[in-house]
Image (cartoon, rainbow, N blue to C red; front, side):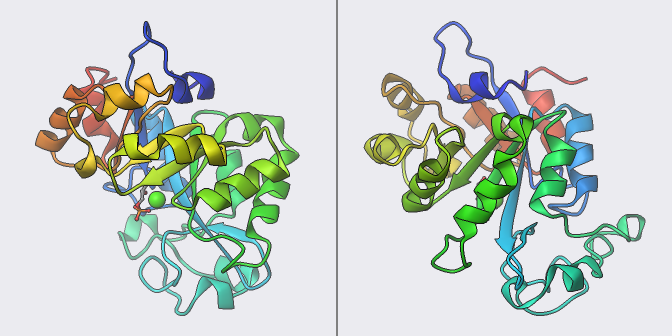
Length: 257
Ligand code: G3P
Ligand code: CA
Protein backbone atom coordinates (compact mmCIF):
# COMPACT_ATOMS: atom_id res chain seq x y z
CA UNK A 1 0.00 0.00 0.00
CA UNK A 2 2.83 2.38 -0.63
CA UNK A 3 2.19 3.84 -4.06
CA UNK A 4 2.81 7.58 -3.86
CA UNK A 5 -0.06 8.51 -6.20
CA UNK A 6 -2.57 6.59 -4.09
CA UNK A 7 -1.12 8.33 -1.03
CA UNK A 8 -1.76 11.83 -2.34
CA UNK A 9 -4.85 11.33 -4.54
CA UNK A 10 -8.35 11.08 -3.16
CA UNK A 11 -10.40 8.27 -4.63
CA UNK A 12 -13.96 7.81 -3.42
CA UNK A 13 -13.77 4.02 -3.78
CA UNK A 14 -10.35 3.66 -2.16
CA UNK A 15 -10.66 4.94 1.39
CA UNK A 16 -7.64 3.04 2.75
CA UNK A 17 -5.67 4.67 5.54
CA UNK A 18 -1.92 4.75 5.01
CA UNK A 19 0.46 4.37 7.96
CA UNK A 20 3.30 6.88 8.45
CA UNK A 21 6.23 6.28 10.79
CA UNK A 22 7.07 9.69 12.26
CA UNK A 23 10.85 10.25 12.29
CA UNK A 24 10.86 6.50 11.55
CA UNK A 25 9.67 4.40 14.48
CA UNK A 26 11.03 7.02 16.84
CA UNK A 27 9.18 5.71 19.90
CA UNK A 28 11.33 2.58 19.63
CA UNK A 29 14.58 3.76 18.00
CA UNK A 30 16.58 7.01 17.74
CA UNK A 31 14.62 9.44 15.56
CA UNK A 32 15.73 10.25 12.03
CA UNK A 33 18.28 7.43 11.81
CA UNK A 34 18.44 4.58 9.30
CA UNK A 35 17.75 2.15 12.19
CA UNK A 36 14.53 4.01 12.97
CA UNK A 37 13.46 3.98 9.31
CA UNK A 38 14.15 0.23 8.95
CA UNK A 39 12.12 -0.52 12.06
CA UNK A 40 9.14 1.56 10.86
CA UNK A 41 9.17 -0.28 7.52
CA UNK A 42 9.50 -3.64 9.29
CA UNK A 43 6.44 -2.73 11.35
CA UNK A 44 4.52 -2.19 8.10
CA UNK A 45 4.65 1.60 7.65
CA UNK A 46 3.78 2.70 4.11
CA UNK A 47 5.68 5.97 4.52
CA UNK A 48 8.52 7.27 6.67
CA UNK A 49 8.62 10.91 7.73
CA UNK A 50 11.95 12.66 8.44
CA UNK A 51 13.32 16.20 8.75
CA UNK A 52 16.14 17.93 6.91
CA UNK A 53 18.55 20.78 7.63
CA UNK A 54 21.75 21.92 5.88
CA UNK A 55 25.42 21.77 6.92
CA UNK A 56 28.10 24.49 6.76
CA UNK A 57 29.25 23.01 3.43
CA UNK A 58 25.70 23.01 2.03
CA UNK A 59 24.91 19.29 2.37
CA UNK A 60 21.31 18.36 3.23
CA UNK A 61 21.21 16.12 6.31
CA UNK A 62 18.49 14.31 8.23
CA UNK A 63 17.99 15.69 11.74
CA UNK A 64 15.03 17.33 13.47
CA UNK A 65 16.60 20.25 15.35
CA UNK A 66 18.70 23.15 14.08
CA UNK A 67 21.22 22.15 16.75
CA UNK A 68 23.10 18.87 17.15
CA UNK A 69 22.91 18.70 20.94
CA UNK A 70 19.67 16.79 21.63
CA UNK A 71 20.05 13.86 19.24
CA UNK A 72 23.82 13.44 18.84
CA UNK A 73 26.91 13.53 21.06
CA UNK A 74 27.95 16.77 19.33
CA UNK A 75 27.25 20.40 20.10
CA UNK A 76 26.39 23.47 18.07
CA UNK A 77 24.32 24.31 15.04
CA UNK A 78 24.04 22.12 11.94
CA UNK A 79 24.57 25.23 9.78
CA UNK A 80 27.97 25.85 11.45
CA UNK A 81 29.23 22.25 11.16
CA UNK A 82 30.61 20.46 8.08
CA UNK A 83 29.25 17.14 6.86
CA UNK A 84 32.58 15.49 7.67
CA UNK A 85 32.35 16.72 11.29
CA UNK A 86 28.70 15.64 11.58
CA UNK A 87 29.56 12.18 10.27
CA UNK A 88 31.89 11.67 13.26
CA UNK A 89 28.98 12.09 15.69
CA UNK A 90 26.95 9.32 17.27
CA UNK A 91 23.22 9.80 16.65
CA UNK A 92 22.00 6.67 18.45
CA UNK A 93 23.65 6.25 21.85
CA UNK A 94 21.52 9.00 23.48
CA UNK A 95 18.50 6.75 22.87
CA UNK A 96 20.06 3.45 23.95
CA UNK A 97 23.42 1.70 23.97
CA UNK A 98 22.22 -0.84 21.37
CA UNK A 99 21.92 2.02 18.84
CA UNK A 100 25.42 3.40 19.34
CA UNK A 101 27.19 3.89 16.02
CA UNK A 102 24.09 5.27 14.23
CA UNK A 103 25.04 8.32 12.16
CA UNK A 104 23.20 11.40 10.95
CA UNK A 105 22.15 10.37 7.41
CA UNK A 106 22.47 12.62 4.38
CA UNK A 107 19.27 13.21 2.38
CA UNK A 108 20.63 10.89 -0.33
CA UNK A 109 21.38 8.11 2.18
CA UNK A 110 17.89 8.39 3.65
CA UNK A 111 16.16 8.32 0.25
CA UNK A 112 18.29 5.39 -0.84
CA UNK A 113 17.38 3.53 2.37
CA UNK A 114 13.64 4.28 2.32
CA UNK A 115 12.42 4.69 -1.25
CA UNK A 116 12.77 1.09 -2.44
CA UNK A 117 10.47 -0.04 0.39
CA UNK A 118 8.30 2.93 1.44
CA UNK A 119 7.35 6.50 0.60
CA UNK A 120 9.71 9.16 1.99
CA UNK A 121 7.98 12.16 3.56
CA UNK A 122 10.72 14.76 3.78
CA UNK A 123 10.00 17.77 6.00
CA UNK A 124 12.10 20.72 4.88
CA UNK A 125 12.54 22.84 8.00
CA UNK A 126 13.95 26.03 6.44
CA UNK A 127 14.12 27.65 3.03
CA UNK A 128 17.02 29.42 1.31
CA UNK A 129 16.24 32.41 3.58
CA UNK A 130 18.12 30.44 6.26
CA UNK A 131 20.17 27.80 4.40
CA UNK A 132 21.95 28.94 1.20
CA UNK A 133 20.31 27.41 -1.91
CA UNK A 134 18.39 24.86 0.17
CA UNK A 135 15.68 24.28 -2.47
CA UNK A 136 18.28 23.98 -5.26
CA UNK A 137 20.27 21.47 -3.22
CA UNK A 138 17.18 19.35 -2.55
CA UNK A 139 16.13 19.37 -6.18
CA UNK A 140 19.68 18.49 -7.25
CA UNK A 141 19.72 15.54 -4.85
CA UNK A 142 16.37 14.10 -5.90
CA UNK A 143 16.12 14.91 -9.60
CA UNK A 144 18.86 12.54 -10.78
CA UNK A 145 17.05 9.49 -9.48
CA UNK A 146 13.60 8.70 -10.91
CA UNK A 147 12.76 6.32 -8.05
CA UNK A 148 13.49 8.93 -5.40
CA UNK A 149 11.65 11.62 -7.37
CA UNK A 150 8.53 9.49 -7.65
CA UNK A 151 8.67 7.93 -4.18
CA UNK A 152 9.15 11.02 -2.03
CA UNK A 153 6.93 13.91 -0.93
CA UNK A 154 8.54 17.14 0.26
CA UNK A 155 6.47 18.76 3.01
CA UNK A 156 6.78 22.17 4.63
CA UNK A 157 4.87 24.82 6.57
CA UNK A 158 6.25 27.35 4.08
CA UNK A 159 4.17 27.65 0.86
CA UNK A 160 6.89 29.73 -0.84
CA UNK A 161 9.41 26.95 -0.29
CA UNK A 162 6.98 24.49 -1.90
CA UNK A 163 6.45 26.81 -4.87
CA UNK A 164 10.22 27.18 -5.32
CA UNK A 165 10.72 23.39 -5.36
CA UNK A 166 7.98 23.07 -7.99
CA UNK A 167 9.54 25.85 -10.08
CA UNK A 168 12.88 24.04 -10.03
CA UNK A 169 11.35 20.68 -10.96
CA UNK A 170 7.62 20.42 -11.66
CA UNK A 171 7.71 16.64 -11.08
CA UNK A 172 8.59 17.07 -7.40
CA UNK A 173 5.66 16.09 -5.19
CA UNK A 174 4.93 18.41 -2.28
CA UNK A 175 2.62 18.76 0.70
CA UNK A 176 1.62 21.68 2.91
CA UNK A 177 1.85 21.34 6.71
CA UNK A 178 -0.73 23.31 8.68
CA UNK A 179 -1.30 24.28 12.31
CA UNK A 180 -4.94 25.19 11.63
CA UNK A 181 -7.91 23.29 10.16
CA UNK A 182 -6.73 21.97 6.76
CA UNK A 183 -9.84 23.11 4.86
CA UNK A 184 -8.66 26.70 5.43
CA UNK A 185 -5.57 25.97 3.30
CA UNK A 186 -7.15 24.55 0.15
CA UNK A 187 -6.69 27.78 -1.82
CA UNK A 188 -3.08 28.24 -0.67
CA UNK A 189 -2.27 24.61 -1.53
CA UNK A 190 -3.63 25.13 -5.05
CA UNK A 191 -1.89 28.46 -5.54
CA UNK A 192 1.53 27.22 -4.37
CA UNK A 193 1.46 23.78 -6.00
CA UNK A 194 1.07 21.49 -2.98
CA UNK A 195 -0.50 18.09 -3.70
CA UNK A 196 -1.80 17.23 -0.21
CA UNK A 197 -2.52 18.76 3.21
CA UNK A 198 -0.79 17.71 6.45
CA UNK A 199 -2.56 19.26 9.47
CA UNK A 200 -1.75 18.99 13.16
CA UNK A 201 -4.38 16.45 14.22
CA UNK A 202 -5.63 18.43 17.23
CA UNK A 203 -6.81 21.16 14.81
CA UNK A 204 -8.97 18.82 12.74
CA UNK A 205 -12.70 19.48 12.93
CA UNK A 206 -15.31 16.72 12.55
CA UNK A 207 -15.96 17.74 8.93
CA UNK A 208 -12.34 18.61 7.98
CA UNK A 209 -11.75 15.38 6.04
CA UNK A 210 -15.01 15.77 4.11
CA UNK A 211 -14.27 19.42 3.25
CA UNK A 212 -10.71 18.69 2.14
CA UNK A 213 -11.87 15.76 -0.01
CA UNK A 214 -14.56 17.95 -1.57
CA UNK A 215 -11.78 20.41 -2.40
CA UNK A 216 -10.00 17.60 -4.27
CA UNK A 217 -7.20 17.07 -1.74
CA UNK A 218 -6.12 14.33 0.65
CA UNK A 219 -5.56 14.94 4.35
CA UNK A 220 -2.70 13.52 6.46
CA UNK A 221 -2.90 14.43 10.17
CA UNK A 222 0.15 14.17 12.50
CA UNK A 223 1.17 12.92 15.15
CA UNK A 224 -0.92 10.52 17.28
CA UNK A 225 0.78 8.26 19.83
CA UNK A 226 -1.95 7.58 22.43
CA UNK A 227 -4.38 4.80 21.55
CA UNK A 228 -7.41 6.99 22.32
CA UNK A 229 -6.11 9.72 20.00
CA UNK A 230 -5.37 7.23 17.23
CA UNK A 231 -8.91 5.82 17.52
CA UNK A 232 -10.41 9.33 17.47
CA UNK A 233 -8.54 10.37 14.33
CA UNK A 234 -9.12 7.03 12.61
CA UNK A 235 -12.85 7.61 12.98
CA UNK A 236 -12.50 10.80 10.91
CA UNK A 237 -11.27 8.58 8.03
CA UNK A 238 -8.22 10.61 6.96
CA UNK A 239 -5.99 9.38 4.15
CA UNK A 240 -3.09 8.56 6.48
CA UNK A 241 -2.17 8.42 10.15
CA UNK A 242 1.24 9.38 11.53
CA UNK A 243 2.85 8.19 14.78
CA UNK A 244 6.17 7.70 16.52
CA UNK A 245 4.75 4.19 17.15
CA UNK A 246 3.68 2.97 13.69
CA UNK A 247 3.01 -0.47 15.23
CA UNK A 248 0.10 1.10 17.17
CA UNK A 249 -1.30 2.50 13.92
CA UNK A 250 -1.05 -0.91 12.23
CA UNK A 251 -3.03 -2.46 15.08
CA UNK A 252 -5.65 0.31 15.12
CA UNK A 253 -6.08 0.14 11.34
CA UNK A 254 -6.52 -3.65 11.56
CA UNK A 255 -3.35 -4.24 9.55
CA UNK A 256 -1.15 -5.84 12.21
CA UNK A 257 1.37 -8.10 10.44
O1 G3P B 1 4.95 15.62 9.95
C1 G3P B 1 4.88 16.88 10.51
C2 G3P B 1 5.52 16.95 11.85
O2 G3P B 1 6.67 16.18 11.84
C3 G3P B 1 5.85 18.36 12.26
O3 G3P B 1 6.37 18.42 13.56
O4 G3P B 1 8.24 19.01 15.04
O5 G3P B 1 7.75 16.66 14.62
O6 G3P B 1 8.76 18.04 12.84
P1 G3P B 1 7.84 18.02 14.01
CA1 CA C 1 8.79 16.56 11.03
